[in-house]
Structures are given as structure tokens and as C-alpha cells.
Amino acid sequence: MQLGILGRKCSAHDFPTRISYCIDASGIMSLVIKKLAEISLREHPGSSTVAVVAPSEDERIPILKRGVRLVMLRKLLSDLKELERDGINSGQFLNGTHTEDSATDWQEFSRERDEYSGKACCLHTGLSIVETIVSVQLCYIYK
Image (cartoon, rainbow, N blue to C red; front, side, top):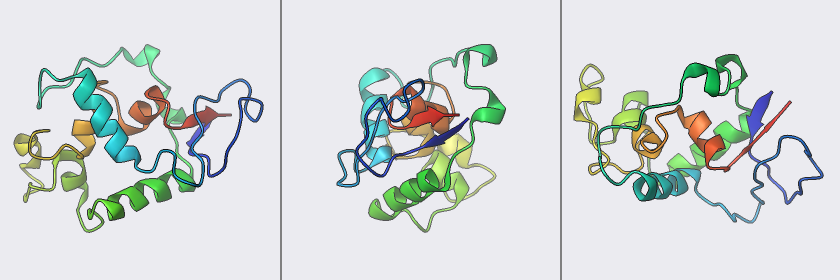
């Protein structure tokens, strides 16, 4: 099983057992990161630093099945470029563009300072970014 974002219009007929959502090439869902940030703020407004408790591991997508296709990585890179974040490091992606030191960036995390950081986008689920994208039906899982 892998995850992917469709680059064309589709129907449940295309992937009848596993499809959750389709994104068409015209950009119905133009920025995954912006959408995740919006959902996170709406569903978890109580804290800008503490995530909800994630479900137990047996209730999550198995870790070895959380792989992504190249098209999904390209979509996230495209989003980062559109948000002028294509020059950030992994710590800044996760904890915010305001952070400067990889050793301490986790201490500086706050959704109020960077609503588009990876952590900010996942506060409402407590899950990984891949699982969060699936949980809000911005991509599909297929076998």
C-alpha cells in the first residue's frame, strides 16, 4: 500500500476499495499545507504548542505502509515553493521558519509563529504528516 495524490479527476470506481479523495490537475486543492493548517486551527484551537494525543499504534496506518509516491513529494515541494519555503531545512519545516538552530528548534515551536510548519499542520491529529494528510482525505491510500 502506498499514498499518492491524483493528478486527474477520478471517481471511486478508479480505486473502489481504498480511495478517499481526488485532487484534479486544475488545483481544486491547490495547497495541501495551507489546507492542513486551516483544518488544524479549526479542529484544535486550544493550544498552539501541544498536539492532541495520537491514537495507539495499532489504530494507525502500519509504519511500513506509510510510504509515499514521488508525485506526493513533488506536490509538497511545489507547496513549499509557493509558500516561499523551498530553502528551509528539515528542522524549520517541522518546527517553523523562525527557528535557527537544529539542536533547539523543537523548543521554539509554536503554531502562532508559523502556522504552516509540519507540526502546526498536525496538531489536531497528533499523527505524522502523511497520516494527517490521509486523515483529512487530501490523498488516497491504495494497494
